[in-house]
Image: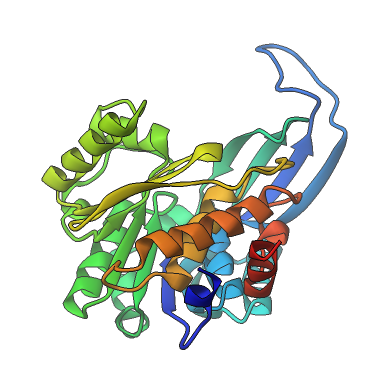
Length: 314
């Protein structure tokens, strides 16, 4: 299996997504309604689902570009510099002069579980025309990834361009929201967690049969290939040719904040465009995610390719 992960040539991945400065507050437990709790400590780091996924892809070896928007503020400059530290091409990041950079506030309890509040800010100001203006960045990619922390209209424009250039599109429908049906029709692979999948299909994810039913529903909606992440249990996959379940690695979770984003970014670094190696790519992504949850903070805990390979040999 490890030999399958060794690079011959890295994938080229473009991410359309969110850029947030994450502020994490550590608490003994989640507060009850009306309750005030003291925090154990406070920390800030670069984050946002889009940024996390891009960093995960880059650290796993992919040649990575980013399409997004920040405010004309210190937070925005910090986010761009953070991506550049991982050698991510930031030339398609636009500066909004009227709306500030996005931010997220994360409550993290002693069990490693989190609750997150997100202010979209400039992430929500990305326009279709700005996406179309960087068509070349999309056309150069093997994969284009998007989430729901940026406008769906921008995602539709980007995915439409991607399909015109033969680029494989990956949609992470998080946070779950009502989806423009046109987006799924230009989505090659949709990757929700079990809660998001149930919200979008109306079918609760409880067992293999319900996962198969979710895959059938997504296929009817236009997305032919599906991965459902099921937390510490693993990930279900269904393509046009096969389906199965890849178990997660058992570890002690410290902070689950960027687990799903690491999974998607690492997956995109290894996956073939025809999805023919999906099981081995999923195993690689699960290993990457298992390392992320053992560290504190979103972006700081995302592993490199060498760290993923080293962990796989233990």
